[in-house]
Image (cartoon, rainbow, N blue to C red; front, side, top):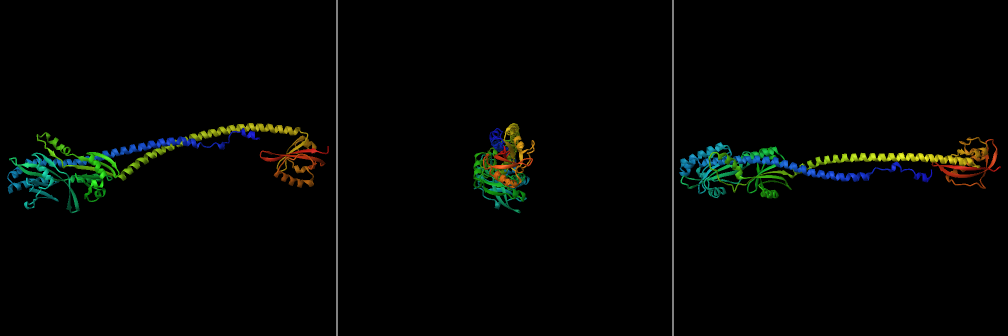
Length: 509
């Protein structure tokens, strides 16, 4: 087969490789689109989860605010009832020992019926306490006259004294530290007060009810138990906040003030001051807050009493500034964000893997089809070449056969593979009898071993050797006669093997 014939064959099947470049050019843009969409959905899902958290925590805050509304609204009703009580009017008009004792009895009865009332007092126009009943653990006691104190320097006295008759005052939330059997206990205190007059219209000081916001404390504990990953806080006007940690909720409940929020969480406090209600994600976590407005707190009483014909009170709430806040630490947000990212990225990865697998199967199918086409084309070209080779071999045989010079083709082992009729006639062999014989057998016995060595050495460096002087030999015919011959050698490759075309001339003729 010639070099020209080799170039006519199609490319080798093994040279057709998987189209990796095409695979990457298709996969990379799709991967970018899928993962970019996944990132967008991650943010959307995280935002939706935050919205659900805000809605849930807002419900908790509304519930907490409901406890404040209940305590404040009830105390305002009771405060108004006291201003209309006959014993109060008698004590204001003539504060005799008997009248004051009767007033103590009224205060004690109200305190016994309302466990959240820590103190009930009448403070006269000079700021001196005239009657005070107080709750000490489970007992209600009337404080002796010698133990009554001067409250003229207290902010709530100054604020309530300057109100008009019928108006009410709501103080800010104070955090009082008290000793109890279980240790130090924090008690948030809220005060409601109203000015009072005697029958002649003279100012006679104020009535004050101290409300222990125990419901709020219990509510903080319940909220912490229901949502252990959230810290709930009750914040007063000065930025002091009362929280119940998860560890406290699991143990004996002893809330502690956590300092000032404006010092420990300045960014959160700055946000809280901007709006009455809102939420924000900050460096220290996610904050949800809601400020309790006095008007909204008292609306329930207002609407309840509207049908009774009572005149609605004017509320001074300049000092009332109570904030409820829910704080989720940054770790909770990180876990929530990670959960959203992992789930969506997993779906995106599965989608990308499915696309890549489908594309891989498609390209491999195309590769198989292309290789099959090449194999078919190669087989057809090979068949054509085989036909051409057969034709050439036939022509070669015809040329050799038609030559008047004896010719034999010898392989590397020295075995005669082909001979023409001239060689067979010269050596006295019938048609085809030379094929399969060793070329050494055509020489005299004494020369055969030497010739075998010479032949082996020649095949190591084969070259064309023309007929001429110096290469005269004797050949043995089939009947044993010796004839002088001259031999020419022409080596060539046949299917990758060395063969030699030997031309033989009978010199005896």
